[in-house]
Image (cartoon, rainbow, N blue to C red; front, side, top):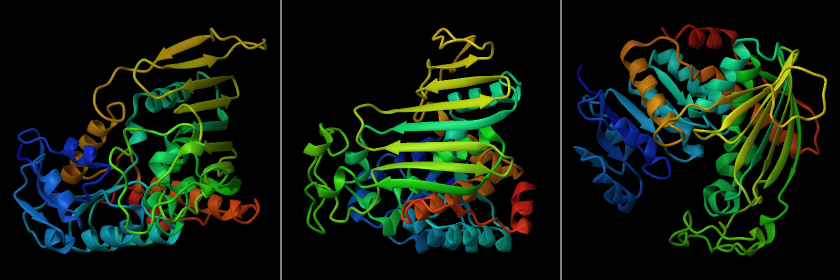
Length: 389
C-alpha cells in the first residue's frame, strides 16, 4: 500500500497530531509543511524531513502530489483555510473546534458537499479508551436508557494554557465554553444519543480579568507550558486581550429528551474530567481519562453511596498522545481519505457541538437567557450521515 502524502498547515501546539500522521512506509507520510511564522517552520521541519516548506498555505494547495491536508491552525482561521483546501480538491483533516460560529461550520459543510471533497473533523475524544468504554457500557444496556449526563471539567493549568495567548481573545475563539468544551459537548451527544436543541448558561471572568498582562506584540515567556504558576492569582504575563470567561456552567436539553449539564473552571488545583451518566436502571461515573482509570457502575439499590460500586470497568491500556487517541484518529482519517464511508468522528456531530457551545456562550453573556440551537439543513445532514459519498 502506497503512503498517503499529507501536507500540514500550522505547526504549533497540535504538532503531535501531525507527527502521528508521519509514518513513512506505514500508510501516511508528511511531505509538505506550512506555517505563517518562518521561525516555527524552521524549528519544526526537522521532525518530518518534509520535501516542501512554505509560509503561504496557497502554495501548499497548488501541489498536485498531496492527497490530504491537516489544518492545525488557531480556531479563527479554520473556516477560511478549510474552505480553501476543499475548493482546491484536497481532503481535509480539521482540528476541533470546526469553527468559532455556527455559520462558519455550516459554510465549511456546504463547501465540502458542493465540491465533493472529503472532510474530517478531529474530535479525538471519540477514540479515547475511556469514552469508548462508557459508550459500550451504555450500548449494552447496563444502566438502562440514558436520561441525564453531567460533566465537570477541572482545568488546573487553564490560566497558563488559555489566558496567555490568543485563546483569551473572544474574537478568536468566541469563548472557552466553545473552544475548550467542544470535545466534551460532543461526547455528551455521543453518549446520550442526541443533539442539543436548547441551552442556557452562566459564566464570568472571576480570577484572570485583573492579572498582569503583556503588552501587544510581546512574545510569551519561555517555558510557559512547562512551569505553571500557583496560586492562580500569582499568574503574570497574560495575553494583552483577556475577555473570555474562566468559569462557566451550562444546561442542555437534547432532541431525545435527555437533560445534560457541563461545568468548566480554569483556576482549580487539579486537572480532571468527571463524567456521570444516569439511566433508567443505573448510573456510571468516571474520574480521569487515562489508561488504568476506572468506570464505575451502580445498578442495584436503592442504597446509600457505595464507593465499591456494583461493576468496575478498567479503561484499556493505550500508548501515545491523548491516551492513544491521536494514533487511532489518524488511522481513521487515512482510511477515510482512501476509501470514504462513515466515520466515528462525524462532521455533523462536530457542527452540533460547536452550535451548542456557541449558543451557550450567547446565553451566559445575556444573563442566562435560554437560546435555541439552530438546526442543521437536513440535506447537509443527510449528505454527511451517508458518508459523503
